[in-house]
Image (cartoon, rainbow, N blue to C red; front, top):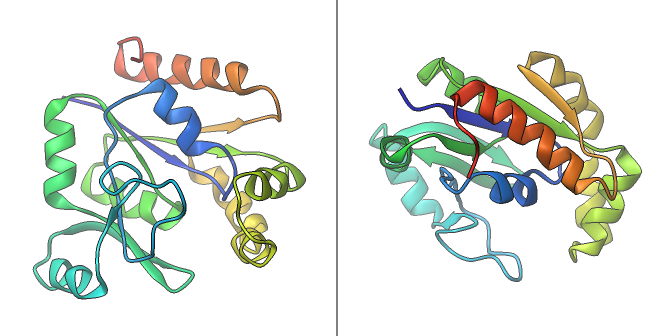
Length: 182
């Protein structure tokens, strides 16, 4: 049975950068929001219309969905089954997404990644987010931090400690899957 690593964390915590260095088989979420500069359809997200989202929902094809900042995000059954059929996989979702996935796939391993608030703020500015967007996305920081108690592993990603954090996550993945990460 292949393992699913479910990763959550607040905006700017380094989730995507770290996991893409550790594992290649990512369950790609869809979103109804517009792509950010540099994002690639099918790699970062599957960018879909609200109409397409509503169709997937009506057809019962979603294993996870959430509304965030006026946009919808989620994972469809086909994407999930395809990636899990290949091997161990990872997915990046928020706390509510993690809860939904655990119901469908209780065998998953959950990780919560975080940084101190000021580091997250600086990271989001560095990646080109506007001040308004940063403040809006970090308005849920303290709420998200409270949810970390519901995860199997909680890992702090310290500024300029990418390699150390990566090694910690690799050890968790290896211990949970029984295989070294990619």
